[in-house]
Length: 404
Ligand code: GLA
Image (tube, rainbow, N blue to C red):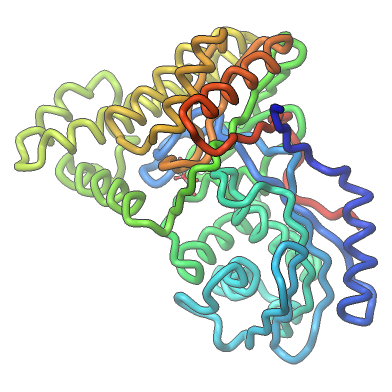
């Protein structure tokens, strides 16, 4: 039976969490906030080289009920974990605390590093977490947790919550992830969780951190975006992500540019010749070709969406996947299988989304084909003896905010 993973209703989830907070900590929370996971429509592995990405927020969110303390201590529990984690704020720093608490206690630390001020950042807090972004699925459950904590703290210290304010929060959350959690990711996931709006994706320019909203009326076009969680494990802290990043940074250095955004697609051949002359030139050529062509594909996808031509982006999604599979080498068997089966069963386009090496794929399908494509993917996994995948519907949803 094809399993769909639905997001629970926001108000009921938040109210239940507030009640549970009172049971756990003996007092009412100051409020309940939540932040979404994301899928990236296109623009993969380019957010650490000044590229363009086009993520949208999922309806699946992580909720945090929170109450400030005054003794510089963070006490945190999660409905998805056992026990309580207690962290002294003066012990937060590179690699500390370890585990999931890094995404909570790292946030007040990072906000202060970024110049945010207020008693709620130094005094600590009690927090109860309830995560509904599938964990370990490449859908940014970690960013959702960081961003839910960040939006709560920002509100408590009365930081501005317009898009500029949210960009500052996103960069603090990225810092928490890079330094405290020790995962050297780009900033796409946090930007998506904080800066997206219902009904659209954001065109994120990671060269100057600007965002423009891109309407995504898939239902109006008779389309749906099916997310397939392959259930194949992935980890960004793992070495492959870091190695890709190092390849790209080295290529930029050889080309004498601050990042690969500066290489125009019209000048790609010359850039490939230049890096190809290195001893490891063949690998660098493929990495550069992915980044430069991917950034171009994002711009073309955004143009088509702005013209209301969502049904015309399928080939770009397909080309993105093929490039990630062959040139960037971040796909895996389950992702390739999903993409192949979805395409064979009528998807307009399909690709891996997120960091790769497992995680999730997306398929752009006619609305009346969603079930058929999901069943075909399910059957293919069963046929190959793989763990059954999970399916989500990606409705472009609202970024982080207060629930109660
Ligand atoms: C992960 C990282 C992001 C981005 C993607 C790949 O999700 O957290 O910063 O690099 O991989 O596009």
